[in-house]
Every structure is written in structure tokens, then in C-alpha cells.
Length: 91
Ligand code: SF4
Ligand code: SF4
Image 1 (tube, helix red, strand yellow):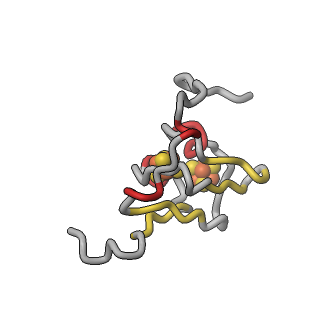
Image 2: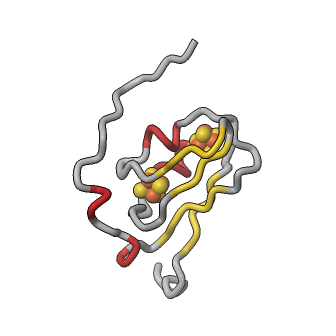
Image 3: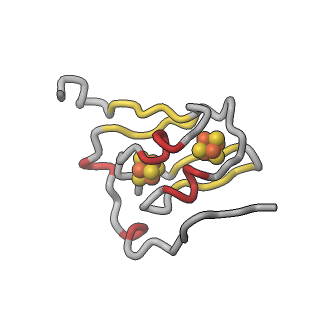
């Protein structure tokens, strides 16, 4: 039985605005230890995480704002937050 806590609504204008230009980090989905819990998918405020298979997810980086919620929520640490090129010297 599937139980989802909270509510997921469609993103408003998220998919009309590309956010990659001002992002400092982006998620890297390792697709190694995923258990298919969907926490990244349900928790992404931009709705840019998508499911490829039962235990395989990825992100559309054109619309990811780099908030890191997906990586924080992943219970098996299967998502790394990676610095964008050119942000290496940022604090
Ligand atoms: S970093 Fe934030 S915006 Fe990007 S995929 Fe993860 S939860 Fe969504
Ligand atoms: S939060 Fe982690 S384990 Fe859960 S679906 Fe996403 S990548 Fe898989």
C-alpha cells in the first residue's frame, strides 16, 4: 500500500523559466542505490525530477534551481550536489 504524506501540485510557471543560468550547484543522480521512494520526485519544488524506471530518476537541468532538496531527502544518498563550472571559488 502506498501512503503519501503532503500534497503535490503542478508547478506554476516553473517550466517556462530556465534557471540554469544562476544556479551554483546541480544534482547528479547516481542511479546506483535508488530504492524508488520518490521523495526527490515529490519534494522538488520545480517539478523537474522525472522517473525513468521504477528505481531510476533523473532531473531536467534546464529548470532545476539547485536548491538541494532532492539530495537532502534521498534516504540512500544516491544524489550528489555538484558545483557548476565557474563556481569553484565561491564560498
Ligand atoms: S536541486 Fe532542487 S530544483 Fe533541482 S532537482 Fe533537486 S529539488 Fe528540484
Ligand atoms: S530520493 Fe533517492 S532513493 Fe528515493 S527515488 Fe529519489 S533517488 Fe531514489
